[in-house]
Each structure stands twice: as C-alpha cells, then as structure tokens.
Amino acid sequence: MSTPHEGKRVSWVELYLDLIYALAIGQLAHLIIGEPEMDTVWIALGLFAVLWWTWIGFAVQYNRQGDDHVRERLLFLAGSIPTGVAAVAIEPAADGDVAAFAIAMAAVRLLLAGSRALEGGWPAALRTGVTRAYVLSALLFVVSIPIDHPVRYVLWGVGVLIESRALLRENRAAAKILRRQGDLSVVARDDAGSALDPHHFAERFGLLLIILIGEVVIAAGETTAELHIGTAGGWAALVAAMALAATLWWLYFDAAVDINRRVLELAGGSPTVARALFAIGHMAPAFALLLIAAGVGLLLDGEDPGAGYWFCSCGLGIYLIGTRVFFAVATRLQHVVRLAVVIATFELAWLEDVVSPHAFLWILAGWALACAAVSTWRRPAPDDAELKRYV
Image 1 (cartoon, helix red, strand yellow):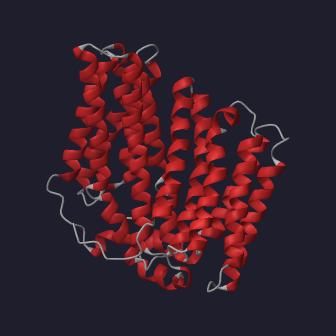
Image 2 (cartoon, helix red, strand yellow):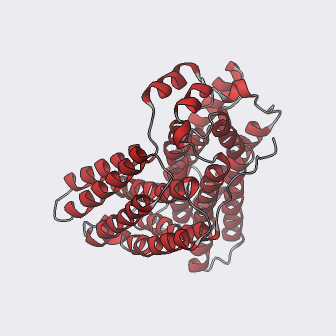
Image 3 (cartoon, helix red, strand yellow):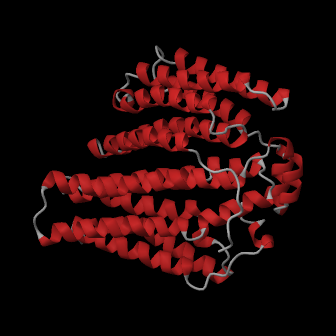
C-alpha cells in the first residue's frame, strides 16, 4: 500500500458527532432484531438513508470549509442535539409516529443551510444552491408529518435527492465520460471549483464503517451478556462473532480505504467521483454491516434465529460486492471465480436446516476469513491506469 498523502484531518468535534450516529445505528439494529421481517428491513433502510445523507452533509461541510474553530464546533454540537432526538425517535417512526424524527431531521437541515448561507469563499451559485436545497428538504420533512405513508416516504426521498444533488453536484458530461472511458482527469478539471479533500473524505467514511463494524461486536456482546451464556458452545459462538467482525474490518481496511482515497486523489477531489464512490457507493456495504449486526444478535439469541441466517449471509454478500476490493485488480478468470464465491455467500443461509445457529457463526466467520485471504493473497498494488477504471 502507498503512503497516504497528508490532507485535512478529522476533527474532535466530528468524532463526537459520530457518537450520536452510533446511537442511531444501534437503534436501527435493535429495530431489526425486535421484528426480523422484510418489512422492518425496508423501513430500517429508509431511515438509514435519511440519516446517511444527514451525516454526509456534515462531512462535506467540514471537508470544504470547516476548521477546528469555535463556529464549526458550535455547528456540530448544535447539530448533534436534533440528531440525537432523531436517533431515539427511530422506533416510534418505524411504527408510524414520525413527528419527532421528521422535525429533528428538518432542524438539522436548517442548521446546515444557515451555516452555508453565512459562509464566504464559495462560488455564489454553489452556496445558494446548497442552502436552498436544504431549506426545501427541511420543508418537505415538516410537511410530511400529517401525511400517510407511502407518500410521506416519497417526500423524504425527494428531499434527500434534492439536497444530495446540490451537495455533491454531478457534472453530467464528466460523469458520462467517466463511466465510458474512466478518464478521471476530465472529471477533475470540470469539477475543480468545488473539489473535496480526498484524505479527509476517505478517513471520514472509514471511521463511520468502523462504527458500523462495532455494531457487530456490540450485538454479539450484548446478546451474550443478556443470556449469561455459560456453555462452551456459547462462548465459542461469541468468539466466532468477534472473529467475523475482525475479518469484516480486514476486508475493507486492508486495501479498499486506500484505493478509494487514491481514486479521489486522481480525480482531483471531484464531487462526481466522491458521489459515486463514497456517498452512493458506500451505502450498500454500510447497511450490509447493519444487517450482519442484527443477524449476529438473532443467531446468538437462539429464540427465533431463522432470519439471522439470511441477514448474515446476505449482509456478507452485499458487503463483499459493495466494498469492491474483492473484485479489484483481478484477471477475467479470477473475476468469474470470485463472482461464484459471492453468489455462494448469499446461499449460505440455506444451511439453516442443517447446522445450529452457533455452528453457523463459525462457518460464516471461516467463510469471511477465506474471502479475505482470497482478496489479499498476491494482490499487486494497482497502478493509476487500473485505478481509473475502479469507479
């Protein structure tokens, strides 16, 4: 791996805000564990998407204009309050009582809009566009409160789409060239006026993934403590869950975090690439970790572990695809073999009728470890030409 280039570092106040998001992520995991059904998963995914883009708003804010000064600290600390309210309001929001969640999300967006409206140094069009997008999104969240679903969720989705497009504006012509030719130099040139710091952006997303991997550890530890497992098999299952979490860390941080940063560097901090590779590209593996955490909790609990098999196997499969490094820098034959491995990962859930939940955790941990070994073994460091095709 290459030595990371120095850039803007993550601030202490950003790490504090991440603690609030850790609370929200934990609430989403408990929501799935409490009602392990597909309807609950879809609801959790929708709430996760709203929280995800709220977090990205703070990440982009600090990346472009932030510094460890009083004004920035006050913004993040003020933003942590409604975010914390939204985290606690996740369970009632899932049951249809969305008032507290929607008002909290609207308040966060008004804070971000106000911060951007007061800033200097941005191109006027960019500043105005982002500010207006956040105000409109906040309005949609408030208006949605008395409206029944699914229209309510459509309004949320429209609000998130508006703000995300303004926050990381996609140059359509450059994006088209990128998808067709992988020419990052064109994207960098066209997006130079609103470039991001690659080091900070990669570090922010890496830290958030650590929080999500930590949910796997928390789910395993909390469930074990609640059940007071005293058997050798119970403790062994806990060890397997911890080993699985460690392997999930390796699958991303051994290479993916460095590759993502280098690609964004080659693109000159292009918002087009940041949107594709980080903001959108990391949503799948991030939510996959949430599914795995819920699945581990169900498997260790043992009362109704059926959904746990599927959450864990599907979550691991999505994680392998979403992190993308599993397929990076491979020959055509290797791509075919690795694709077969990913398909087989989804199918592991059929072992539900064959092995116990605790035994399945060992199988899953071993399978993930094998995938990490395949991903790492004899993998050459990608050159710039290969990285340009990575997005």
